[in-house]
Length: 138
Image (cartoon, rainbow, N blue to C red; front, side, top):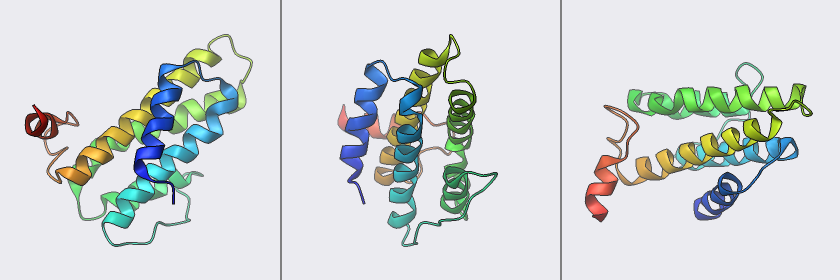
C-alpha cells in the first residue's frame, strides 16, 4: 500500500501542475488509495467491489458504514468519478485540461479530508472544513 504521505505528495503535485486527460486513471487510483487508508484504519480490508461501476464509490460506502460524518466526502467522490467519466469519454474536449485539474483538486481534497479524519474522527460532523486540525496546529 502506498503511504498516505506519498499519495498526498503526488496529488499536490498534480493539482499544482497541469494534469491532462492521460492522468485521469492515475488520479482515480490515488483517490482509491486514500480511501483504502481510511478503511484499513478502521480495521477492515478494503473492498474490491464496485458501486455504480467504480471501486472508489464502493470504498466510500464501506468507509461510511456506521460513521455518518464520513458522508461529508461523498460528493467529492462522486465528482471525482464524474470528471473521470468526462475525461474518459471526451479526452480531446476543449475543457479536458480544466477537467483534469479539477479531478486532481478533488482527489487532493479527499486526501486532506481523510488525513484530517484520521487525526480527528469528529471531522465532518458539521462540514468538511478541517477546523479541529487547524486549531491544533495553529
